[in-house]
Image (cartoon, rainbow, N blue to C red; front, side, top):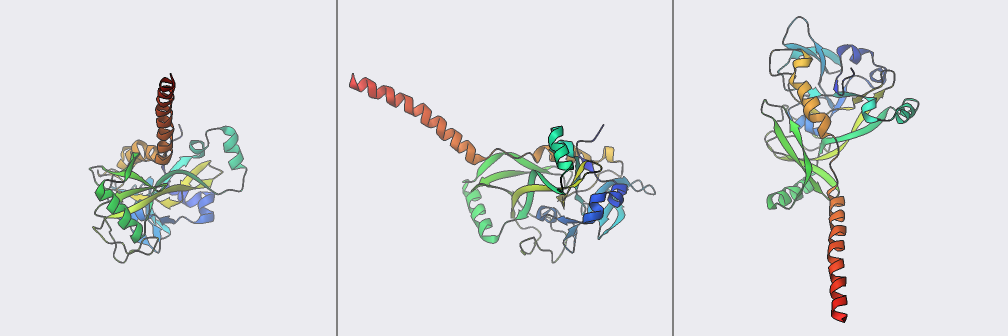
Amino acid sequence: MEDEITLLTRKQVKNLDILKKYGIEADETDFYIIQGGYVHYGKGDYWTKTPYSDFSFCVFYVGCGYVSYDSVYDSYFGVRPVIPLSQIYKSEEKLNKVLESNRDIVEYGEYPKIVVDCDLEKKLERLYQRGNLKETNKSYTSMLKEEKEKYQEYFYQNNKYIRVKEANISMDDCEFANGRKAIKGETYWLKVEPIEWLIDKKKSIAIAKNVLTAMPFSYENDNDYEKSDIKVFLENYFIKEIEPSKSINMEKIDNLIDLMFVTYVPKEKKAKQKVR
């Protein structure tokens, strides 16, 4: 049975056509940096699902343009998910159309990615402290530690954001995408944006273009992917949480229409009664 979501294998990293074209390295997101991920020349390190056979507590990962191995409980490496294209394109007609096209990159789902600029951050924080930010119907789960942490999603001016308190920056002199210095322990606001996926048409799979977040492979000394915490994260949280939340803006419009309907009819009836 085809996995709904998983990680690349070591063999796939070396052999997939799409990675031969774009390279095995992947850009990191600011969320990955905030979760403590390693950054090398703007690229993030990410886990594969392939165990290192000589040590039961080591797994292969990709970093600095090559494949190496490290301990399963190392939290400096990230998550670069893989999903079947049929997960994105439910109908066979749409799937075949994409497979026959020249497209290499598609968008599917959304996730916290980019730290906002200082001016917007001050505005969001001020609204948050006053309780004036609207919550959406979803949050994002972090499994950086054994205790899961949830980041509530907020809606502001047609965009979605999360607030991360006490950033877990692991590297000195690290910068976010907008040039801001990443400082350990600071509070940051991140914008939720569409996830880009690289398409490997031969295997009919989609690979996240970025390293999206950082977390250990497993909290136990076990390099079996089927028993790993990263598998739990992908299947129980990530794949569900990337589904876009309903726009608060549309909810307001819906509520306004309902309100107008409810209040309009009684007024009309009252007006008729006055005439009588």
